[in-house]
Length: 113
Length: 109
Image (cartoon, rainbow over all chains, first blue to last red; front, top):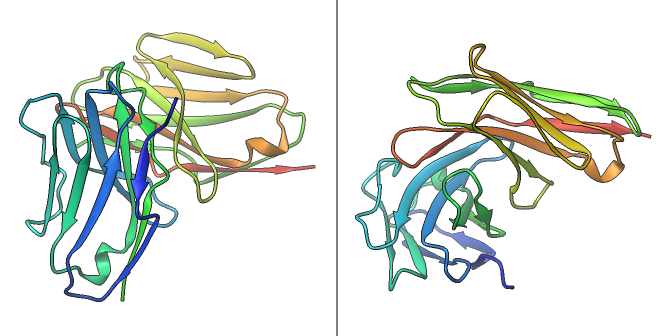
C-alpha cells in the first residue's frame, strides 16, 4: 500500500515568509507525528496528533510554528515569519501500533535564505 | 532530564559483526526502539525492546538491560547496504519519542 507522503520535497523561502508543509499519513493510521532534523543530528519532536484528541504541541519551538490535522488524516505544518534557524528537514510519521513503530515520509527539506 | 548516548561513528568490515550501544537516562521507561536512516532517506523502524533480553530479526538483533539503562543493536554478516545511521529512541513525556544523535556506520570492503 501507499506509504507516508510529504510535499513539497524541497522548499526554498526568504526569511520572513510563511511556509506550509503537508503530510499524508498511511490510511488508517490514527497517530501522526512531526519532527525536525538538522544535518547530522537526531530527530527533534515537534507535535503529535492522536485521533480526535487535542494534539501534543509541547515540542513546537516557538509560536511561529503551528499544525493542524483535518479529518483525522492530512496534516499541515505552518511556519510563520521563517528564520534561518528553521532550515532543516521536516519529517512526518504515522503509526498504527503505537509510539515505537513509526512510518516516516521522505521529508521536506526547508531552506530559509 | 532525559537523554540518550550513542557513539557518533562506528567502522566495520563487510561480512563482520558490529554492535552499536545506547545508554539512556529517563524519568520513566517504556521501551527502546532502533531506526535505520540512509543518507538522504527517511528513518525506518528496525526493532523494539520493551523487556530485558534479546530480540532477533534476521541479521539484526537488539538487546535491552533495564537495570543498566543500556541497549545495543547487533548487526551480523554486514553488507555494504547496511552503511547508514542508526538511532536509538525512548519514550519521553506523553507520546513523544526522544532520539539519540545517531551512530554513523561505515562499512569497508
